[in-house]
Amino acid sequence: MPSTEDGASWPILMTNYRPTHLKNDFLFLEKNKKTEDVSASSFSVMNGKYNFGDTVELPVSDQPLFAKIEITPTIIGRLASILFKPSQLQLTVKLGNGEKKQYRIISGMAKSGFIVSPLIEDTLDFSMLYADPEFLDEKTVKSISISPKEGSSMFWENEYAISLTKIKPELSGDISKIYDLDDFESSVSVNNITQSEQCNGGIDMINSIIPIPEHIDIKRFIRINGWLLSYNGKGILPEETYVVFTDSEHKQKFLKVRAVSREDIGVAYKNPELNMSGYTSIADVSSLHGEYVIGLAMKISGKIEICPQFKIKATIGKPHR
Image (cartoon, rainbow, N blue to C red):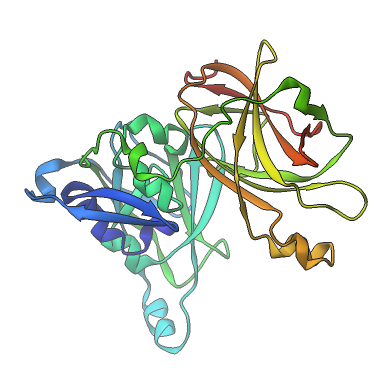
């Protein structure tokens, strides 16, 4: 699980540091002039003992939850760890939207502690810990379960202990200033828009959600990745790629995204010129409110062609009911 990597240091970073900027997927932090003891901004919310396979319901919290989990090896497990790699443990997390994800968990890291909710999977997620908690609503963990990867194991005691602590991070106001955000096109002529017969590509991820559901809620920021080519049997790189937001009145907003390397696409088409068919974007969509359909478009020979097959329903700025 990503948050177990040096997870014990996260409460210190969250309470005594603030983000300054994000560059090349690295978040730069600056130490606060006035620091405080982490214990002064945290308090215990749960302690308990559970068995492998049990579903552990996490308490509802508007602040990040820091978990310490003590999983004890058996005598056989201790002896076995001297000779070879110990039996792997698996952590299953269930998000509020019902999505489940599984991760390998290392007992020593779990004992040191890590942020268990919200689910932090990358640098952008981590940066959101310094923002309004609602920005990570879709990453809230509802429950967890721990078990040996093989289903049962003689190497671990069946019972384990877990403690949860609320951590109050140092909020940094408008953190949008630290991001290199992409912008919507200020004006796109209707005469310059046409429908494409077919595009090759896809939307791989929106806000760390994979696979993408039929409907998605977006608070303020969107992070989207994928790849796109013009379809002619061989594949042609677009001059520009756009994420298109279409509202209920069929008005469209075009978000210009950045090209990134996707060597797997070049290999699949046996054409290295298509290695840059990937796209990525982080954007502030707080200017949009209500129901939208998210799609893709590309610029070919100066014309913007709307791809017909990408239609993801989204509610922006308010929860879907």
